[in-house]
Amino acid sequence: MWLALPTADSATRRRFSNAAAIYLNDAFGEGFKESLVEACLQQLRPLQTASEYSTSIVALSRVRRARQAVELLEEMKQRELAPNLYCYSAAISACGKSGQWRRALALLRELRDERAIELNAVVWNAAISACEKAGELKSALKLLGEMEASGVEPDFVSYSTAISA
Image 1 (cartoon, rainbow, N blue to C red):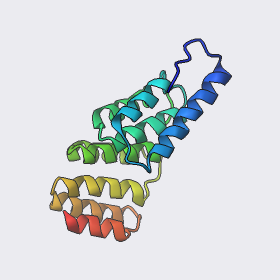
Image 2 (cartoon, one colour):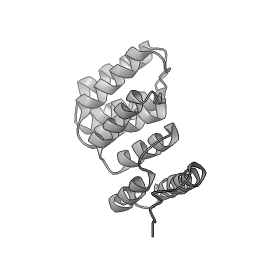
Image 3 (cartoon, helix red, strand yellow):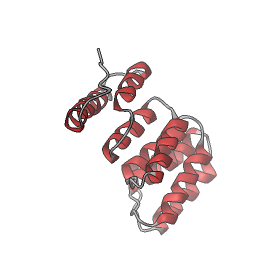
């Protein structure tokens, strides 16, 4: 059972937040339940660190809550906590799992336009997978070409996911 710590000092909050994050990460392997995610996310609120945001975005991706994952990504930027590639990959994945392939591609474009983070195969594969889930073969193949042109070498996952679209 989770207990709220409304008046905890920062050190206690940090330890408690770390425990909630560890619990979320452990839950990834065991049929991730939406109710457990919600309970853990409530304990992390208000989110304060990039790590707490990252953990929350990944958890939301696992339970297909694209809108909330993208909202947290935007909130991170507003608070000047630079989202890393892991945050973007998870948000793109959440969009793909929720059938929002266009939103997934918009996030990829945004990330490419920022040029502050070097893209890797994981983020490209998340976007290709979003197209694959929507049956968007043309878009998946276009992304594969853009991936190669950007200097990121497609891997087995890239090719098999694009072909599956």
